[in-house]
Image (cartoon, rainbow, N blue to C red; front, side):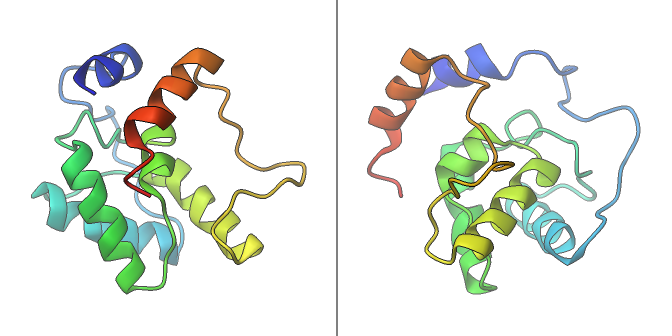
Length: 132
């Protein structure tokens, strides 16, 4: 797990925060920022901050997704790993709403898992298949 995160989350500055704070732009992003504040114990995550670079880990990712479900927002742990910013994860929430069953849409414009090579995605799915 740690090796996977190290391979994929190493291009941000040491704090994981971006130079400029970007606030939430809609209700889903606002709720996600609020949840990240609670789970990570940080005052003001921006929508472009990387969850894993600002203190997140697999356990906290589970906590985030569980809290989101309390508010009727569907986000899978795998969504957060593949889309580690509020801005990106909020798009996953929108896709889950459109589909209504929690499965990614097969229509054009859906989020693609192109960030990972096929073998890395398979490794990830094996490692985290029991979390969803």
